[in-house]
Length: 212
Image (cartoon, rainbow, N blue to C red; front, side, top):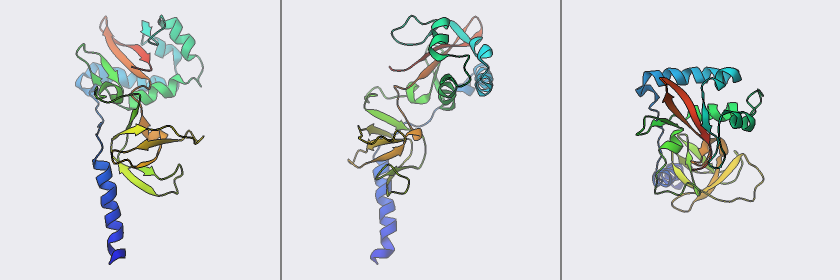
């Protein structure tokens, strides 16, 4: 009888652990404004083909590039090396666009949803969002190790780790369970986010910054 119920019991424990976590579910309001949805689709295409000239045409001349610098298009170009097809800009902005976003009270579109919807009551320096469903938490940073929990869009505490493997993030759940998640499946609200605003009748990228 023990063998019969061992697997179901383990699954129930995994579910209980996951359900205890606060959620940050995906949100994408882009389709609420048809002209912005069209703009974003155009931007997706530009990023896919690494078209620096077309991208720069969609960037505001006074774009914010950090919380300390002067900003502006020239600083943006120097920071991101936009002429380089291997620039980190292409995957960074593509990832941001893939994670939805929301319009704020000023009518700007803020992406990704992890930033725009992050709960003010939760420390963004200590916690990260799981950006998938059924994400496996492993006992060790290895896909062959035991699954200690499965998470759906949960907010989890990120812990310091001594492992040199940057592919994994050590996290702690509300019930004190610790484990590792594939770093591609979590995101911090402190990561890069983008702001899009409508100026002179057209949408533009007005900020691409990290931090809060």
